[in-house]
Length: 136
Image 1 (tube, rainbow, N blue to C red):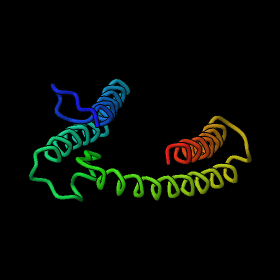
Image 2 (image 1 turned 180 degrees about the vertical axis):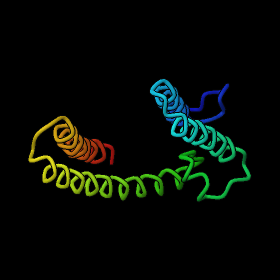
Image 3 (image 1 turned 90 degrees about the horizontal axis):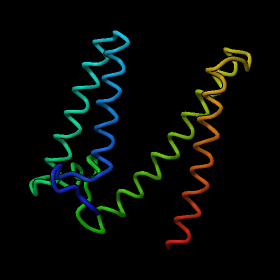
Image 4 (image 1 turned 120 degrees about the vertical axis):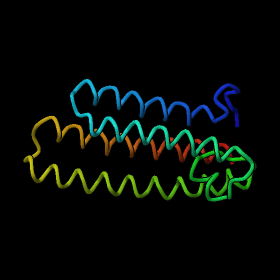
């Protein structure tokens, strides 16, 4: 796993933290200071969690929750956990799509957004399976 030396966390954790901070900025611009504050706190907690996970004092669960793997065992457990998360995300998206489709009559931007999310997750699942099979 590559680690950015200055940040002392994995690059994907840096990207997620930056995305959370960007979301906080957008929310602040829109005038939702409470949500902006929550997103800022979430970004800070995320960074602190990732840094602690790399400290050498963290437990297996902490490293896995922070997505800061130190060995093959962590990577294997993390891959299994992400597979479960993928199934839950797909089922949740399907449920949201059904609610949106029923409540909007299959019209409007929210309907198309919900449909796009379901289709994107299904495509991502298919591509991930192809990649996983080729790597094994």
